[in-house]
Image 1 (cartoon, helix red, strand yellow):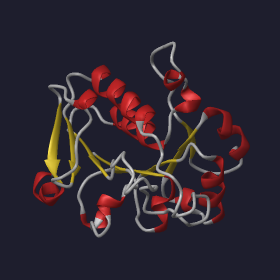
Image 2: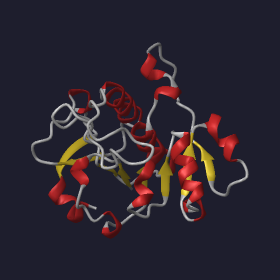
Image 3: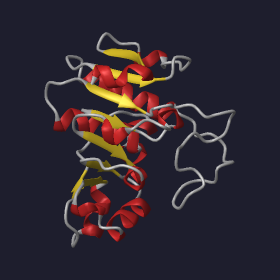
Image 4: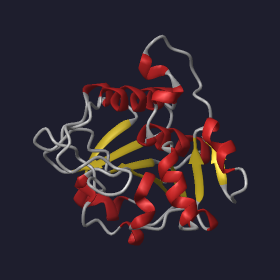
Length: 198
């Protein structure tokens, strides 16, 4: 299974040519066809249904938002967080599309490796790192980079909870994997190897 975030490292990657079931984040449908789209942001779900994307892809959003789209086909509630914690990052409302997409991959698949691409985490020269920056429902292109601490922490929780599953993080050679992700079941792979490894 391939989980696709929207970091700029994946620019030029031919997502549609890669094999396997794909889970994408938010506005990925503007460029690629994926089986599942994780969209915790209500504005993105509105855009999805306005373009009838939900007729072909499963849309996963917050349980609180699902009721707002009850009349639409293929709108699903994201699974509940499996643990309770005392940090802000432990609250389901503070989970973003990327962490939820990785979590959903563990729910929808049982054995095969889970491959992550586009999870850049860090900004580019202190500016936002997102393929869709400056477009509808996204921050302006010159916005300050998002602090990745919640994403790092939440995805580490998924890795730890699924300690018998293999996760492979594909990115550029010069990208630094967070220390929290240095776990026995998590492997860094150069983005150039993705086709041969899937």
